[in-house]
Image (cartoon, rainbow, N blue to C red; front, side, top):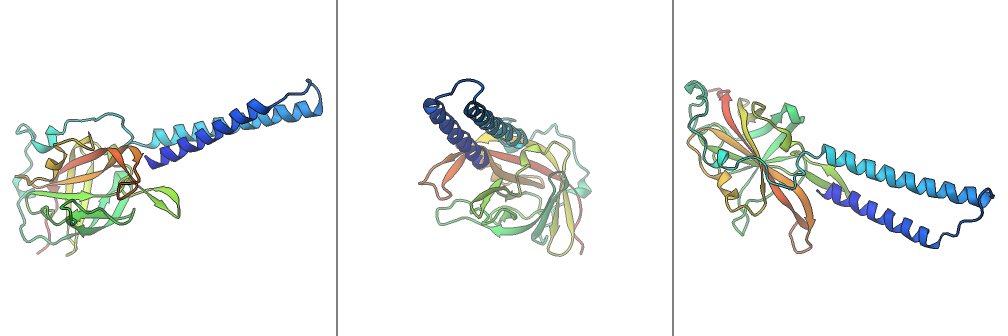
Length: 258
């Protein structure tokens, strides 16, 4: 993540500074005022390093998406098992004329965010949201409630005034089976979805694009970045993440009002 990369950079800078201090330091004899001052300086520098290391550990512990290896089974999403427990037919009846989604609520993540509509860019690639606090629904996918796959995306972090901040899908990797995602539609109605799968896949996984395919049942797919931020000046956003977090949820309730 960019946060961890910048913290790591700070640690590197502090370490280099301490190395220079150590190479130039000539300690006076023990007991002199200068000796006490030098020792205090060394202790202070050591405390700074320990504090920085502690902060690094805290950020890493909180970063649910910072996985160095893929997790979960992508096949569970792109090829749903026929052995999954059936949902009552009344709750999954397709609604072809359903209104567009306007807001997403995920209580476990503390998410209550507006939804914007995006599509494909000039290179036929999915566009990305232009801010940290919005969720994108892709108009090349189904609308929620239409009986197929509605695809959403959001950022995991962002930069505001040069400072890194968490974004709307920061905790996406923490969602577990059974967690609920609510979608509010522009006509005031609500649909509810239950998480069935949460996987982390490599950015260049050839099957990654298949998570956006149409499905025979009413589901939503949430996609965000995960893994490690790798700077790349040639990339449109200045770099890329090593992994993607993909959450699949099935519709379990809510019928738009007529």
